[in-house]
Image (cartoon, rainbow, N blue to C red):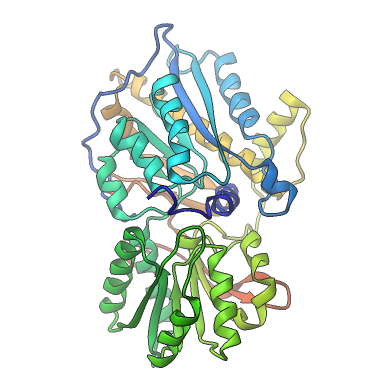
Length: 431
């Protein structure tokens, strides 16, 4: 399935935006297969980063700044303060082209797990499932992802080694359906789904069906399009939905293919209610712009997001991180930009890793995969108003979600008043 993510270039950009801004089977089966420290006693980390430069130049990716510099600054900051549990952090960097397929991402995984011999690998978004599994399943290393929505199967195969800031596909589907139901968007509608004809999408489609069934709804049509570099048979897919009487469509299509499908639907005079989510990274400022040619047909689409939440207050933590980066490098990013938020996400990740290791040491425990996983399961993740926590059976962090509506006038997503909630608490998304 080396070509299954021909849209990786765009997904990278979107996931990084989300990073700046599951109920998974966490498990406790991670063992002690990777060394915690090298021969020099340093604790080894590695970050797998996309080369976004070419995409930034043509406007297909946000400018998130110099990610390698970000990570190195905050690692150096810790080392200059005495290290972690008396040992230094050592971080390596592996790159892949932003348009890389799953197969083309593999060398970065090998570089991180074997050449860098990392105890834990940081992945910054846009990473396909196969690369996560290369780290966690094939090389048995811990993967810490700053942004990404993964199916339950990826968590299960990772055997507790995967942690992601983003919400897992099963929780996302459950929350989306419950929120839409509470808003009255599903009542009386004939529901359909359009997706890629891939095992990943088929697995998440089962999660969607389960969530709908819990609320007394069902999918009248499940349209699976052949998708490699792009998606084909859009015209046939639209006709199936039309003939099935579908007037509300969930989409799992990728960021490039989805606007094309919406445009084809509009050309045929088919304008259902569209539902989007973090699964396909649609509910973000960057992806909203991709609908410029089909915005009139997409107007009023509703999106469910846990990563595209708008900040409404002051973020002292990320502001402090940016001040420290500027002091170390002289680089200063405008407050609230993608690069400014990326600094905060990097700072939070490095600080969390150090905090976990310090706590393990303070408790007199050895640093192993098992202890690192156990202590990471007690951690919270806060990046602005995107926040959540891990747990023994929950390795996807973000718990705050929001419904937004697409506006053709501004090519943007606007929050729906009163439609922000925390998973497991009052309102949509109860456990």
